[in-house]
Amino acid sequence: MDDAGSVVVLTGAGVSAESGVPTFRGEDGLWRNFRAEELATPGAFARDAKLVWEWYQWRRELVAACKPNPGHEFIARLEREHRGDFLLVTQNVDGLHRLAGSSKLVEVHGDIWQVRCTSCGSSREDRTLPFPELPPKCDGCGGLLRPGVVWFGEALPEEAIGRAFAAANSCDLMLVVGTSAVVYPVAYLPELAKDAGAYVIEVNPDETPLTPRADESWRGKAGEVLGGLL
Ligand code: APR
View 1: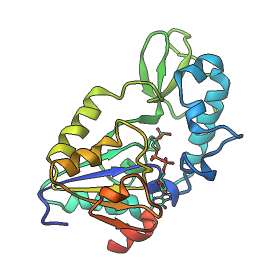
View 2: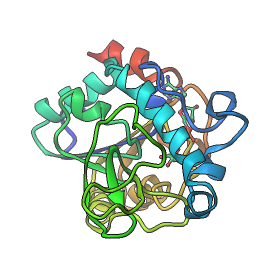
View 3: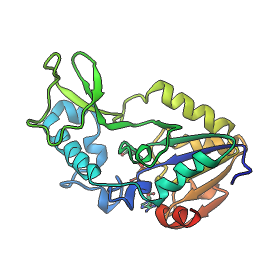
View 4: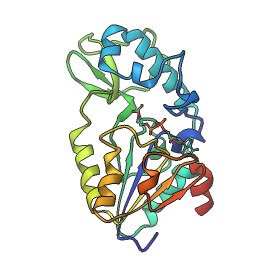
C-alpha cells in the first residue's frame, strides 16, 4: 500500500461498529422503531424537534462512551506513514477518527458534537450531556438549536465534499471501509475513483452495491481485518 501515490480512505458507520456505535441500516439501526431516514430530515425536525433531539442525545451518550478501535487506529497510522497524498473522507459524525489521531480528514456529514442555531445561524461545539431541556436553545438569541450534521435532503458542506471529490478523482488507491454505499453523493466517490483508474478495496463483512466494481473485497470486520495489518 505504501507504493500507492495518492490514497483516499472512505469510511462509514461500520468502522465504528466494533467501538460500540450502532450502524444505521439493518436491525441495529432501529431506534424505538424509527429508521435513520425517518429522523434525520428537516421535515422530522420541523414536525417534532424534541423527538429528533432525543435520538441525537441518545447517540451522543452512546458515542461519548466509545473509544476508537484498531480499524480507526490503522487508518490514522496509514496517514502518518504514507509518503504520498492522503485524505480520509468519513460519513461518520462520531469524531472517533479524530480521537484515533487522524487529521487529514473531511467529515462530509458533519459532527454530532456541533450545534447550530436555526435562528441566528451561529454554530459551535457543545458537549453538554444531557441537555437540561430538549430541544436545546441558543445562548445568544434563544433560537432553536439543531445538531451540526447533514440531514437527508440537505446539501453537504461545499468545501468538504469538494475536497472529497477532487481526491477521489485523482487517487491511485481507495480503501472503502464499513459503508453500505447507498447514500449519495458520497456513494459516487468509489465510482468516480474507479472511473479515474484507481484500485478500489472494500472492507466490509457483507456485500454492498460497490462489491461488483471493487478490485478486492476484504470480507470481515474493520477492526479485525485492518487491525490485523497493524
Ligand atoms: N466493520 C466493517 N463494516 C461493518 C462492520 C464492521 N465491524 N459492521 C457493519 N459493517 C458494515 C455493514 O455491512 C454496512 O455495509 O457497515 C455498513 C454500515 O452501513 P450503514 O448503516 O448504511 O452506514 P453508512 O454507510 O455509514 O450510512 C451512510 O447514511 O444514515 C445516513 O448520514 C448517515 O452517514 C450515514 C449515511
